[in-house]
Image 1 (cartoon, rainbow, N blue to C red):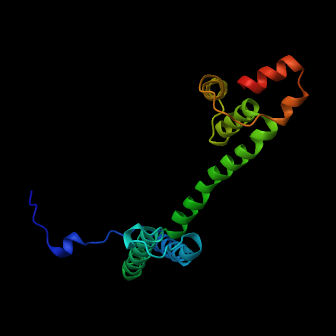
Image 2 (image 1 turned 120 degrees about the vertical axis):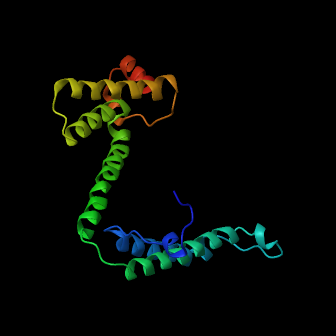
Image 3 (image 1 turned 90 degrees about the horizontal axis):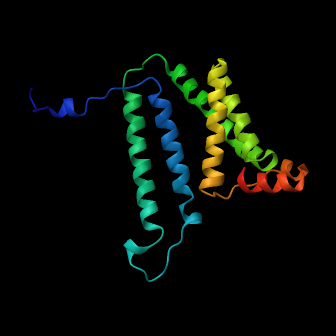
Length: 179
């Protein structure tokens, strides 16, 4: 096997279907972040250049914008591949799981950690296509183990649910402490 490569083979570009869309997002995102650098960081008078709070974030964002522009240029000059819409649609559909997480985090303060975790574990198992009773039971058991691990054993301070307020005093205290 030869380890000698030509300069052209080192920089050969293998383009993917959604590459140009990603390149535009990277460039727009980096330029938007760079435009906010003055509002988000400060410049201290009399300090050394490398110790300035704005210096390294500005360098990294400028580099990100610079390389994103070259990525966009390379994508624009490469041959067009079919399948761009399918690739972008795959990215959009993956955002569904971010929405599931936001809904879960929103529901915990109202329903409580245990009921919300049980509900979402079952809902997500059904969403991805599991229908067997044993698999759904495994999702419920996994949810209970997660709740016990985080809330009871690790004592992670999580918001208690408003629904727990309607429970009798003894049960309410147990649910607030351990579940």
